[in-house]
Image (cartoon, rainbow, N blue to C red):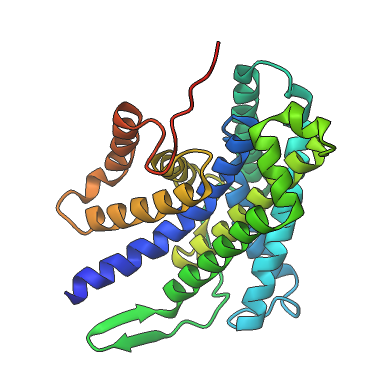
Length: 300
């Protein structure tokens, strides 16, 4: 039983990170109906931003301390939000009325550009991520839980609740839902569509940046291509839960993290990645709208 609970906690911790990344995919898809494949590289930039912040400004971002770790996370979220808005402004906005295939190809190009610029700037070798927070082991009977996993789950849960509040209870959240429903109608009602789309990119990128820091706390190594596999699995999570559905993205991330953790602890650990993508194929075959998504009929 203890081993089972340990696996569940590990899976929820990993799934929470997938959920944070998946939310960026699902929000952008909900507003613009395309997949921002550069999103996983914002995740990577978030990890490197934290890595260099504590090196360049150790007196401000004090490592191995709770205030310093919290400051790093919020700073990285702000930087990644700005990066996401810049990407939207320079790469996607000029193509907004172009065919979706053009935007998709551009997203792949932006992703490759960021990865190779990061390799040029940071180097290709993995680098050890610093201990931002003090690590302790909490014993609950025979169950041992690292404080890092509790922090990851707690921060992710807080950000998920904050996102739900923004989307459901604020004026900009209402505008996001209006633009998601229909761009033209929202514009006629006085909604600044450009501002809403830019805010959506910034919000999703901020969550990806936080995910990059939390992921690096759990797996303390950063390198320019670290976002590829977590980004792809987060995309699977978004599709699993229902692309365009915020609770669905969170649910998909948690389910995928738990499944992956149990597979890693079994005799089929070498098939972990394959099983994740097998889930994607099965979902697309038998429930394309995802677990919480709704089938939408398009009139032609």
